[in-house]
Length: 281
Image (cartoon, rainbow, N blue to C red; front, side, top):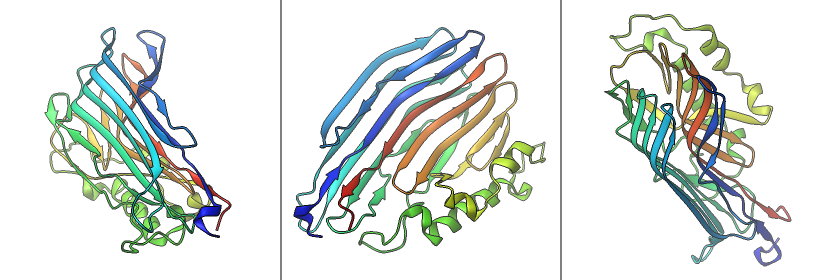
């Protein structure tokens, strides 16, 4: 099918912050600086400043942007870029960061259906847990199918290399031998075992949860399980969560399941990109 006979439908969404609190107050946080891309492409951005929800959480500024266009390079296809940034992030003075940035770029081919994807521009800056610095190493190649500069021949979710890497992540999270020396409690909780038990069948179900975080080091109150931290009297911290299905990539830099004097679920710096081309080729 010639490229001139095909139409690409862009799809990109970004949200700086959102979620809900159940305690000490009941409050739903509407999506902050939300932005979606037109199916025809183009550009859009949103920005917000000095958000504060009583003493629960705050940020100094946040912005999102989405863009989609046909590449001007010969032989290249449709390019989508989505960015979500939060600066001066603070939740209960326990989780803080100078800057969280989620960025996804995809390029769909003129002929074929599977896009290339990269996460360049994604970063954590000065992330701290209870005032203790956390050094984050990111795996920008988590979705690299090893095909050089060409377009993938299959969706990322069905690629054996991708599945092996995710399986290795899960195994690392559920192996007590990987605990750093300073961790006192070396017991793997049941909820970690249940959530991160790899099974190839889960990829067949339509989506795979993994992380762009390759390594997180630092000494802080709590227990690390790969990209997941359990912090006493606070809750669970999930860093760089990447949800991949057959046509989309969704990246959330920080997601919190609060379970202390404050309860709720919130997420910060989320970007999602997919899109599709018709008719398929």
